[in-house]
Length: 452
Image (cartoon, rainbow, N blue to C red):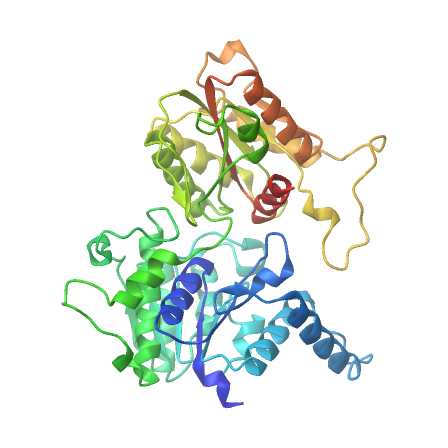
């Protein structure tokens, strides 16, 4: 199928979102495949910037399922979850006749399901860090070797500044393929003509710079540069600025005032309980998340995905709502988060550790939430709490460390949310700012509860 020639294939959800938004703003019909989803599997498949409709998703799902089921046997099993979704994405984008499909690589690259695209127009590798180490390797060199698997002979490739260990592996692989690997610098904010990026955090300028290079290369290779107009060399085309400023991806530097507490308070007051959501789950992303949270709360500014929040002069208290998968190392995650916050003058009043709700409603799962009488296994959350309490800054809240507990473990996320709401309602003169981090699954669970 010749439609595969129009793929931009790369390895970071934020960069993919920026690239898709740019190309859509240039007037093209776009398809975007990302992972994971937060609340609904349809979030993984975007057509022209919107999640695929339920009607279309059901139709394409069963078409793929039935085609595969007719061919499975003892030697050919049904594809695993992510591979099936990748096949579904190819079917959707092909039948919907998108002009360009942007694919976020799942794990690694070399053996990723999206890597069956043999001739993408351009590939990009975003910032590499210590993520998915249980699969990709324990060193940056090993991880980079897996990520470099998406590079293709004769296909333009871009990356961003990387640690030397990772960059040397990427350069070597590109050299073996005869590919010129170009390093893209972070986007200069002045090129946006005072428009903010749609995705917030200083690290997003790195992702935006890579997205601009990917989109520009696709436009050039496909002969569409005549569609864009640059007013002068010091700025970006209007379509690029529009795409970068309107990009939206849930769960990344997203700010959500609690609708229940804030609706019960005086309408003229600003939000009493606000959740700051970021799915950071690697040491590097934890550091970026902490910088964003410290900056946005210290300045009382806010906006993400067109959500704005008024300025406040009230006292505020910072809380951490945290969980991570058991394959993650909290000894690597929590210190990065806590130290970066402390360096920026931010200390948490209390850390709350909870299990994910989504473990009970995964696609194909027969698990159900435990009943009230059934004992819940909180051993992982208790171990997270222990790591936190043993950190140098872990017992330094805004108040004196002896004035109260600095961490708590809750049996469920709804109980933690309930406690936060009750505490905010009892202290309406104080603004409660809650950072939710460590897991995109946790972020999705919080969004789902807040929307109820």
